[in-house]
Image (cartoon, rainbow, N blue to C red; front, top):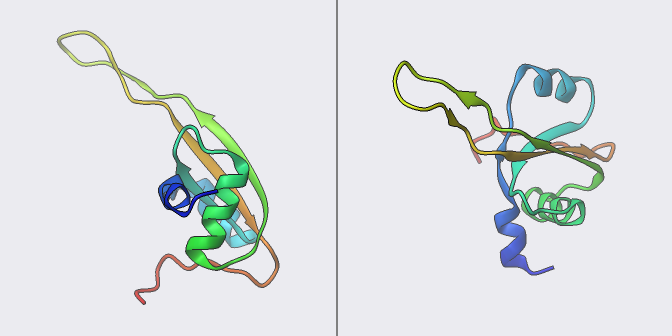
Length: 99
């Protein structure tokens, strides 16, 4: 896999109540990723960018919500892909640090 591709795979960390609870109970982190990313690419990208060891990757395709307005046709938010990354014991990603 090319380094340029791996640097474009991860879009942002996905922070919600569910991911916060999962992250506190174990070494589990969630990311928004590009829609055509594979599990192998996500694993390699996390290991490259955060210098941690990845144990497992689970991927979900999220459907975009339909939004309605007072006037005009109903619109739709874009579909996106979410990845849950399980880190090996002793590995940790801290998004709050300002290094």
